[in-house]
Length: 190
Image 1 (tube, rainbow, N blue to C red):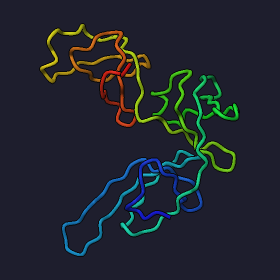
Image 2: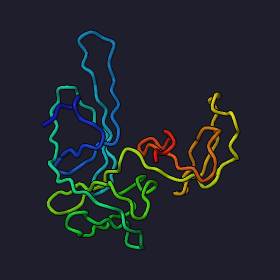
Image 3: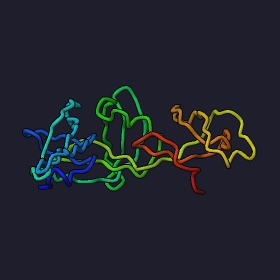
């Protein structure tokens, strides 16, 4: 059972008998002596998608659910939802767009390196890798010698998402994007 000060984004916590995933943690340190640091945590209901905001003191104990982590790959999307396949048992799981929320932006068919969080044989949610590599499909032409300046330009990626990239990048290059922030990190390594 972790303390509130040790909870991390993505943890699954039992709140009032239901599983909730930590989405955002806001730490508030009061300036008064002897005052406790407060942790405002935004949860998302794993089964319902319902948002829940709770405030805890640093020493408050929370009940973390023990989940089975299974490696999965994303196969395809159809009318029933997004289908993933277990890399070990080849079992298929389908999750709705509502349960995946903004993660759908970073899913590409055949993508591997994903993790399914399973409780009692039921997939609760998917964990994305920290970064994904995507191709730039549309951007303004690259400017020679623009590596010395720190100016950016918009670029449309192969998943349809637009990110700001350095001026010297051109269409067809593969870039690495942070899945949590949605921001450009670097060129993808070969």
